[in-house]
Image (cartoon, rainbow, N blue to C red; front, side, top):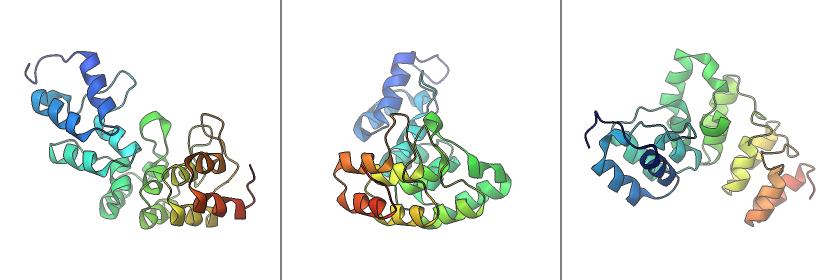
Length: 193
């Protein structure tokens, strides 16, 4: 199958699904079907967006090296402050951007502990609590055990009682994951089980 043929949706879905964590399969599929690179899964997500949402730097860098276009969410997850700055200069409204599944831009910096990028985003007008009802940056810090980011977000007004799409607070996310340092930080800001 060449780049000009239509790829089956189940193949695209497999590729994007594996971009959440299986680099070897992503490499195998992309080698076999180069047109997968920027294809959209049935849930409207690309492989790069999938990797960015789960903090898979290795997969994101592989896809970018293969020619996927960098977007602001991937740049934030990768800590590419110069690229994030350039995106914001070109379009200041991107401070409020969301990635796959409506996940806010600030979350992407939070899951990989890029405090400098997070600071840039807040200065540009990002809402530290964007993503209530979906997932906030504090939920991301809690899920990915980013204690210094959680502290920074809380110091900058992150709401420890915000709920994600499953109805969980950041404290519940950190507790379920066994991230005791993040649990303690969130509790210091008044959140309770």
